[in-house]
Length: 279
Image (cartoon, rainbow, N blue to C red; front, side):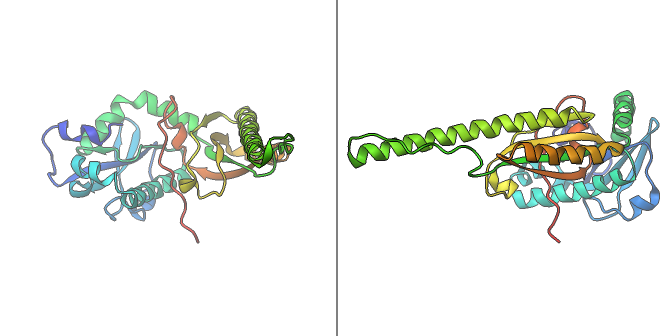
């Protein structure tokens, strides 16, 4: 689906003050679900049917979601988090009801007719994706370095006084740190390969910064796995087995998530992480 960057060239506006924010595409949408699901403007989302598919959209006031406004707002992390959470809430509600192809954040169209045109143009691709996602969920597995779980360097010996001894200790510490990072990275690669072998599809995203992950140690694995609902128990047991096999990293299984990482055949760009609010 087209992004906001195409909005200005879409042609004469049917509604000069509003665009159409795309949340996702399904085969069908329950009107009762749409009626209780708030979109970007706080009003219920609505369905745009075309070509045997349904796009779920909401009204996007251009004062906040237009091209220029979005360019400015996307630099505001607080605004970005609110927008991402609102978008995610709709996609999550749809995914609980059935297969959904989530739209990228900030996919805004000129009007409903443009959305319908995209459904028709991409019908074959979207239908294949919905077939692939049916009965499957995205699960995340993150791996964090466990301090002290990797071999410690022996205290170096030698002569030359206090200064030389200090330099030897620092060199040994740096060597041990590099070795620990290598061991953790190797463990992360092994875990990802094992999990990918038990998933329908897998993606390995770049590790998140600690400020985003909220973890006290570095992340070395940020994997996403498309898992059939009937295979979840076995997949979860495998995560536990791998955690015992690789104590140098702490594994965290999260989900189920809407299939953000698998909404396209090619690996997507890194997505904004949306964390559930604390209870």
